[in-house]
Amino acid sequence: MVLKLAAMASVTSGQEFSAFTVSKALKSSRIKRRRRRMVMVVNAKGKEDNRKQLQKGRNLSIESIQAVQSLKRAYYFSTNSNLDSVFRSKFSRLLKLDMLSVLRELLRQNHCLLALKVFKDIRKEYWYKPQVSLYDDMIKAMASNGYFEQVELLCIYLKTETNLIEPETDAFNALFTTLITFNLSGFAMEFYGLMKAVKCEPDRLTFRILINGLESMGESSASAILRQDAHKFYGQSLEFLEEEEDEG
Image 1 (tube, one colour):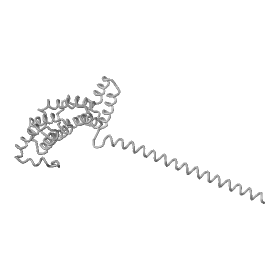
Image 2 (cartoon, helix red, strand yellow):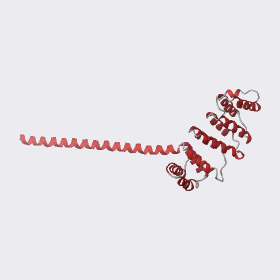
Image 3 (cartoon, rainbow, N blue to C red):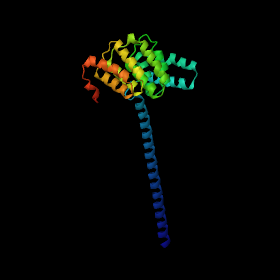
Image 4 (cartoon, rainbow, N blue to C red):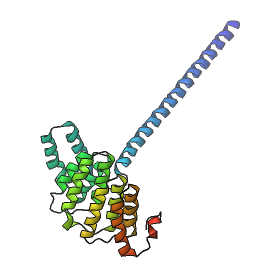
């Protein structure tokens, strides 16, 4: 009897141990599966975030995205002949809006010299028409990355396209802000002259940006010329120069 009870106890103990072992294994398996799912979710989210980062604030077509990637690979890792081939096969076939999207995306990513090469190609297109706002974006990107020789080249381009420029005051004001920010007072005055040449009328913001900016750089002679013009437009009182908020 005692032996039978001992045997039964031994069996019961073995079953409990086996059940405990199985339970522990199942629990461990569930934890691993849960962790695996979390990793998959994180990875999927990361990929989604990368896509959003590429297209945030822009509507880049698939062709534009492919062109950007191909141009960067060819520019940084291939020969000039291969880059020219990529321009012909991937870029030159794009529609107008896609070409401009590629240019702006390269500027956004600070691939400035490659962007300039793209811009040179765009200037050869039959539909090309200079936009002061685009020049502002390019000059801002170049200056921000220390490419001041390229800034000078862009300024030369813009001056040669005077007869094609649309008289857009807001665009000129943005350009003046960029030039003043990077202490390019000479170009600021040149483009003020260009602004008048294309019969684009300056507003209060124009004079506030230029006069205050030039005076902050000690350019009193240039500022005096602008003050004379401001008086012609707005009379003797130039109180608006002291305003801090931009005109909406």
